[in-house]
Length: 229
Length: 390
Ligand SMILES: Nc1ncnc2c1ncn2[C@@H]1O[C@H](COP(=O)(O)OP(=O)(O)O)[C@@H](O)[C@H]1O
Ligand SMILES: [Mg+2]
Image (cartoon, rainbow over all chains, first blue to last red; front, side, top):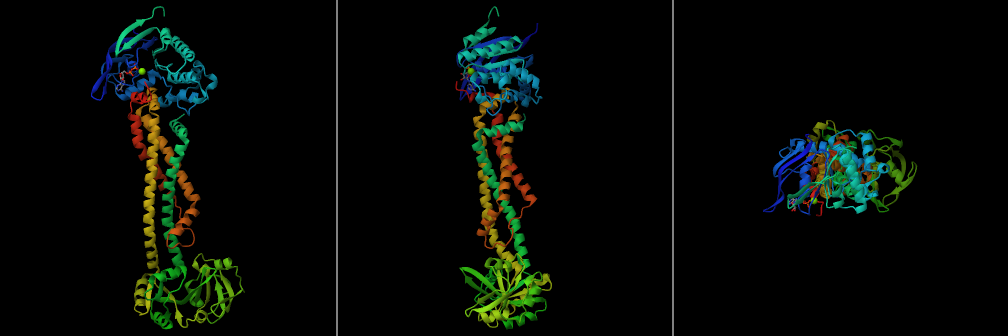
């Protein structure tokens, strides 16, 4: 079965800090299949964000190969990367990044503005239902709690119907009770077939994932499928 | 939702800052628009007014050309006089159609200057065929009669039949006519027969100036040089008067132009500053936008639209303020220029609206280049990182 969505081979990312070179990722190889729920863990500075940004086509590797649905992205031009991000990737950040003057619904529709797609009222309404904010579609971000804001951000990531949802410490700013609602949301989305890759420090979130990749100093030190899930 | 609403909503996040920037643009545009309007209106009005005097040349005593210029406009006195003999000389010049002598006298009442013109009504009526009178004109051999300007009549509450006394001996003069409004300085003057004026003010046979109309306007300068051959006389043409005034106005204008350049520069710096601040504040957001599918062009477009919204709003506001506040502006301008004709000094022209509007858009576009590039070239990574405190 050829269900490999992501194939990373010897991914390396080097940052320059003055005259010093920082190996944020060193020869990282792994594959991710369609429908997986993958957690990436590791101490601060271990390269988690760097890896996620590469997977999200926000940055290119210094060396190595990265294939997304069979397309090699490491030498793709910016224009094509933009298109890939539009069509395949949903991104969720630790600090939500909602636009404060837009309503919940408008924030969710934002990606459609960039992809020049017509807003599909029904699809948007479904997303709002999924994230559980049916009655708050016309509220502004400052009227929402942190957990609700993150759910809006997840809704926004879903708007253009991505194949992969990438989340960088999505519960880092939330209390544990609220974080739990976010895990449940991820779980439901994953059960509907969405591939999810989450960077997290949170063992509970990692626990609901199918598989955990542990990074340290830019290298994978452990890649294990959790049996029974 | 479209880009424009997104841009507008972003601007509303910092209403105070946006309002200040819009105001900066508005001021620059208002000043520019007023100056353009003033410039064209002023020269037009000046020409109108001097032409409506019906005079091509003013023959004045030698050595007082500028006093003559201001005299013809404001009234006033010159310490020197021409004689009846000079009139005879003037009348010998072939190309002159009308030569109308006058004696001016100025006196103060309640601290304000009042001007009495001694004139020959026959000649004056030929010189100013548009003069209409309520009541009647006087004839040149009448005494103790006068015609007054409309404005003067209203200010002093004078009516036909009223009697005023003039001069050191308090000679009574009866108002026989009030001029219909001319919108020239004539509206504020007392006109009496020349002979009466000469007696009254004890200037027998003396005149202040001779207003001259030539037969053929193209020969004005020939006539002027012939006039100057008469020893006592200096000839001042209306175009010289206009030239003199426009020279003075020109220097005022240069000053105003530098004010405008400064205003525009200040507003441009204001826009750039506002944009850079708002772009820097939103690096994380721009990164997010890229992550969810915005291209560099999308981000640049957003920043440019925000700038354009500011400059278009500022431009419209500025034009509105300039139009609505034109009387204030006119009052201000009248105070700082040497000679302000009656009537509208500001002439609003569609072209000026267009020009000012275009300018505000251009300022906006130019100002948005750097912030737009800055925000769009930022990689999402840098953009997001700059908001992360890891
Ligand atoms: N833009 C950058 N320039 C220089 N160094 C960077 C940059 N981004 C990340 N790094 C470095 O790369 C390493 C990995 O960073 P990151 O991927 O953010 O780690 P994590 O998300 O696991 O905390 C760190 O040492 C970090 O300082
Ligand atoms: Mg990180």
